[in-house]
Amino acid sequence: MTTIGELLKSSTTRLRASGSESARLDAELLLGWAIGAERTAVIAHPDAPVGADAATAFEAALVRREAGEPVAYIRGIKEFHGLAFEVDRRALIPRPETELLVSEAEREVAWRLTSAPRSPGTPNVRIVDVGTGSGAVAIALASLLAARRMLPEVTILAVDSSADALALARENAVGHAVADTVEFVEADLLPATEGPFDLILANLPYIPSAEVDRLPVAAAFEPRVALDGGPDGLAVIRRLVASLPAALAAGGSALLEIGFDQGPAVGAIVAGLPGGWSCRIQADLSGRPRLAHVERAATTRTGGR
Image 1: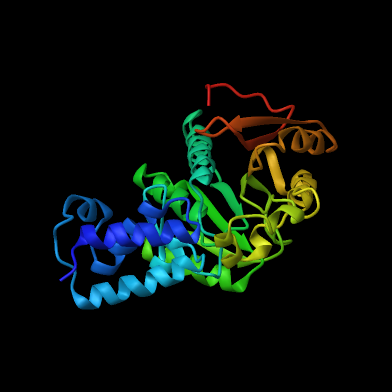
Image 2: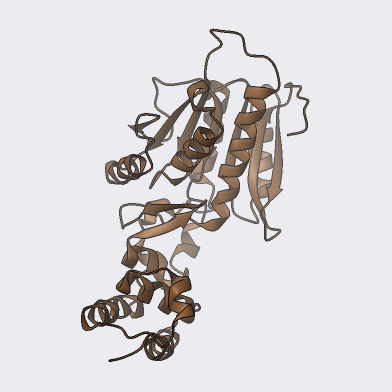
């Protein structure tokens, strides 16, 4: 009977030959999925035998990965902000860099709820996640706020133009016990009948059209509409920013994930809004500019968020 170590060695060679830049990691994740064990257990027990059924499932997974299909789609799950999300071709696979958007949203909500006393009858903090896809951002934020016992004071709306993506997001919301907290709405960017919002979150497509076809082959399995940001990568973001004067409440904030080289362009777009606005670009953990914080310039804040 073949062992874990033997399968990892041969499969890593195959995946490397197929062009995978993370061949060993891919093999470990897929073998763990096939045998029903965590990756750590796979690494720790190289001499353990692998049964025939698991070996067959692993082989089928390898063939799919050799063809370029993302590991997350093969396994059907992707870890994001400490949670496991169901993923498939209905929506973009959540990226690690997007965790910054969730962390900053949590910080923003906590500031709003704790910076000053909230008298009875104070309206909830209204949050919208634009282009929710798998629901990862809205659901991860809801889970964090639930752990801090802040959910009763917030209202979360998740919006996407794809009915298929919203179906996946609803499934994830049920899986993480926040289906009664997050409302899902099909719309192009923001619904006309909703708002204004205190906090707008968005991880919209921001890759220039000409660059989409040059992405690693795995990206070809994801919805192009979730990647393609138009000629300069900012077509959808530009439309959302244009809607902020009507959609964002007084003193509200928008957090927008952007490409690492798009900060100056996004800042210029924000500067063109009527009434005076500010835009601050925050770097991610790798040091790359990643998140645009957009606020009304006249808003005065304290508390060191």
